[in-house]
Length: 462
Ligand code: MLT
Ligand code: ZN
Image (cartoon, rainbow, N blue to C red; front, side, top):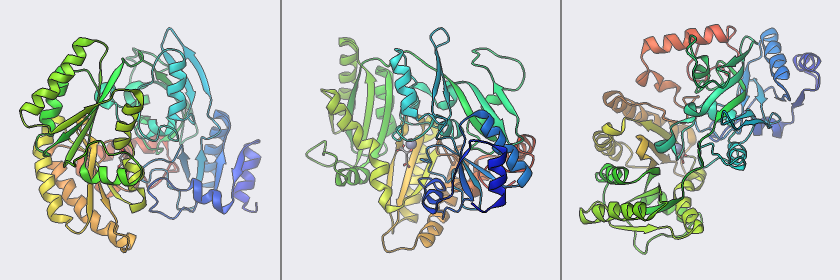
């Protein structure tokens, strides 16, 4: 290792592990976007809060920028290190620290994978209800940094609701203990919430105290086939009125075709244009009758064409695979991802407008619609034709995203529902956040990260 800055880092943080192999720089320098060429200076793997603090102090002395890094499953370029930054990976800080049965909380280091936190909660007879398909690789710290949503938001809300306390190292090198796991705390600004969704731009989340809840009720999974997009929100209303929904997700036939090509089993003999997979509580006969009533109501009113109810855990998993397998099945097409949100009540009007808009603007591309429709969150993935250069493809997609941003402005929505702004959505931040809001964000960053070293260039340019 010849770089004097790294020699100085090792001297300042004894015991720090550093990786500088080209293969490691590439691996740790990118996330699932695969759009930028990774080019970090090195990868640091601290083992303690003190190590992280030492790294941040070193960054302030040397001027080297830091990119905090979790499981790098992000879809907006938030964890990309393409400009000689030091990647600060929380990979070694992966311990569950404590469970408190009275507070119903789980304290973890930020590098704990989401699934490990879920399993630790379950081993104490409780649940950590944040859940999404990349649960095995995504970390708790990364999910906090993006305020991750996922498949159970319709029932439990976003990550933010489940963070009882945070320990962070700010960009200035201070260690802050935020909210201390309290249920009630009316003592000034709640700085914890500033760090939730801050995408590593204010500091590094090093530990979190997660709120736990009762284990989920027994559930069933139902797959519905729908005749049109227009009926989607009516089906949602019919099911929500009669059942306690744990999840309500939609996808198109195009999405299904890709998942089937990836090895999943076809759910129906015929194909249908739209599908919904829903999971609902079903502890007793009354709930089962309510599920059937919801289905029959939809069938009689022409809102659904067919349906299947899981008869076993294995079948439930099979039905879920049809939805959860979409991202993986599409990955080989390097999709351009839109992750947008409007209020659920605004969804019908927004859907009508965007469907027409995208049909007109994307005639040359395959467009895959799916998402957490019960939360007002749509994923619109545009697939890159194999023969097309990536830059030209992205440039064309961005023209359409501008139009989409206009529609979101009109319908009061957001350009990022749950993936974050990162690099991908930075040009559109102003479409859904006012100039005054962005100015406040910049002011906050200036206080917590005075030298602009924390994940620079992500979310906005300072
Ligand atoms: C999902 O819900 O599957 C992901 O957030 C969406 C995506 O891959 O675009
Ligand atoms: Zn999603």
